[in-house]
Image 1 (cartoon, chains in turn blue, green, orange, brown):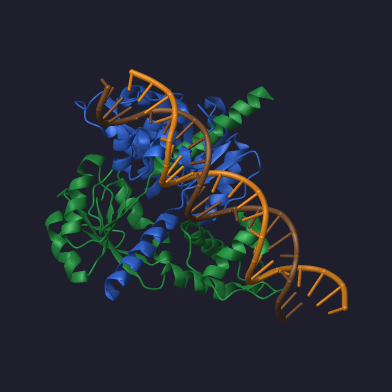
Image 2 (cartoon, helix red, strand yellow; image 1 turned 180 degrees about the horizontal axis):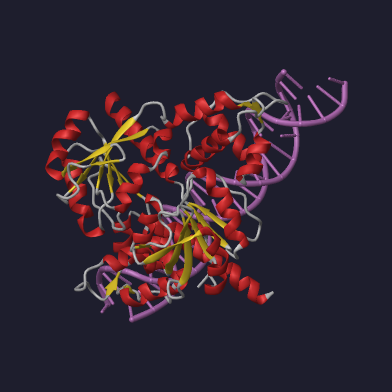
Length: 213
Length: 213
DNA sequence: TAGATTGTTAATCGATTAACAATC
DNA sequence: TAGATTGTTAATCGATTAACAATC
């Protein structure tokens, strides 16, 4: 097991979800060749990636699917559940609360917060929506380190500052705005505009290529 | 203006949203130094990126903010609005319909589709929710080429096939599952698990580093 | 002018891929 | 054994960065 590059890290969730998507009556072993073909990657790259987090495969046989899933989950830290709070119980916040895929990766949203008194006190997808002043107390009491920002752009920096004051050390920002955080806080932008731009650029190339040939 | 690498393309939306976030009383010109510092990038990289899509800046002065915004928007095709349909009017679909950032990048969601008869016929965020059989007709009539999948994983492939039959050529998939599409269809996965994994990996490294020092 | 800034060329770095050896 | 597969070493490729020239 070697140190893992950022590119390799990003591919790990893909391997994991592909392996988990295999039917129950699949063979016990799978080859890097098959994985590469299914995910559109290079065989050697797959082997290097898997070698970095697992004990490796058997020549002629392949990789044991179950232990590979375990190894990737262990590497990604899917076992040790991280608690998170979400700020903003609008449509995006609600969608995130209802998203079932998070628990697969060890994320558990324990509470939501919102300034809107019409929402606070209610339950949404099994999680209580608290008023903002409760943030401090709740994060400290439950030892929560991850905060998810799902508020409009103009409120995001304020929410970000409050989260950091409440002991949050990693922030997942869904608001379309840049945030300033101190060096010791991890910030991850979920920027849908990037994906969208890549998609529409590809589309326009496809359309223009079609026109010319 | 040179051909643009994939990495450069991915940074474009960041430049654009940063430039747009500047206050109205900002100076008319901005230097690559400032942009690089704000976005955590290298100066030279910023200059190369901007040179690829714009007419360039002026030595000693910098880049004209307004024309830079125009150039990036033009490059990304933000002007020519792409119509899109969305399938799945659950909480994720609703969140996407209400998301205001899409129009900035030229995406306009014109209609939603769902199998649930309790939802169809209703309006959501100004868009009508149609029953699935209307998909064919509507896509053809409006010349829609982009489809957004916001249904549960198990229905995603079926929806994907229907979209392609209806003339959709680019698919933005929010379901946590791999989809099979023909060569001539562009597929973009919005995989939140990737971001989440990167975030929690960084967090665990931060916490472990803290324990050792 | 002097200095801040752009833009280019060359070097470095990292990731991917190709070729081949090792293994069961 | 023969052949499919893993794993490693070296080459290639692409992107980033450093050094420097050009410009206003």
